Each structure stands twice: as C-alpha cells, then as structure tokens.
Length: 198
Image 1: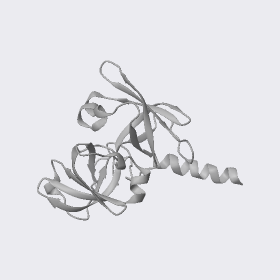
Image 2: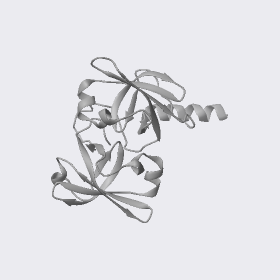
Image 3: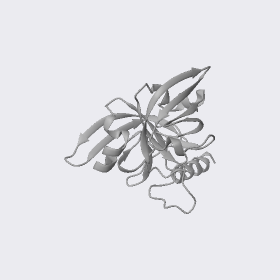
C-alpha cells in the first residue's frame, strides 16, 4: 500500500526491451537502500525492483502494465515520481493508494494561478470510475484533492511544493498521466452498479 506522498523523483537511465516487457533502469537518491523484490510506485504504478546497481535500480514492466499506463511513453531522461510502500505505524498523510492504475488521463489545461496551478484532466468515463469534489485521486502517484468534477473530467489544484518536488512541472497539455481512483469510491460505485442490475 502507498499513500500518494512522493518521496523523490528518479530519472530513466536505460530502457531494455525483453520480449513484450521492458526493463527500466532508474537512478534515484535512495537506490542503494532498496533490495530485490521490493515494491516501489513509479508514477503511481507498483513495480518490483529486480536489481540494484550503485545509485540505480532495475524494475520490469510487463505488457499488461505497459498497455494500462503511460510507462510505455517513457524515454531516456524521463522524470518519474517515486514512493516506497507505507510502513505499518506510519502516518497516512495522503490517502490509500494501491499502486494499481485504473486508466490513463490526458492533460487538457494548465492554469498558473499566481502561486498555485489548476490542472484539467480528461479520461474515458467507461467503467466504475468517478470523482467527486474534494474527493481524493492519485495522478501520477500523487495524492491530490479534486477541485471540480464532471463526467469524464476533473481538475486538481497543485500547491507550489508539489509542483516543485514532483514531475508535475514537466507536464504539457496533451500528455498522458496515470490515474488511480479512490478505492472507497470504486467499491461504492461497484455496489451501486450491482443494485441497478437488479
């Protein structure tokens, strides 16, 4: 489990295709503290560390992951949001994030509001995926509060600290982002869909 509080950003140093999968070599400040078989969220997507090499590590993304996320768009030099899994007894500063991407969204607007940024995002509304104003959502692994919500789109407000210390500042209109909707909201939506079937 994760909380959506980004610990550091890493940089993609090497991309190696292996069949339908990709091994990503990523450099980050805590790489030497990692160990093989450890879970690590990359832009919100949970990948397993398979090897550590000094200040870099290797993680594999399988075909299903590449199809459901924006990881397939990564290039050498791509900056990635990183979060290690939550320690039992630690503070839940964000919200419950599983590291399982539901779908991708597209950046439709970036509004500089003189000290904060309002980001507009659209997504395919098919399925039990909704947002609500002041609800939680993980965007590229960042726990954010929904500012405005409509069917298939929402906006989030970004404080200066988050803008500076995550990869948000590198996003452009049209870019894909990973979305993980609130787990409680998904359960409620799923239960309501089952009731409507009856």
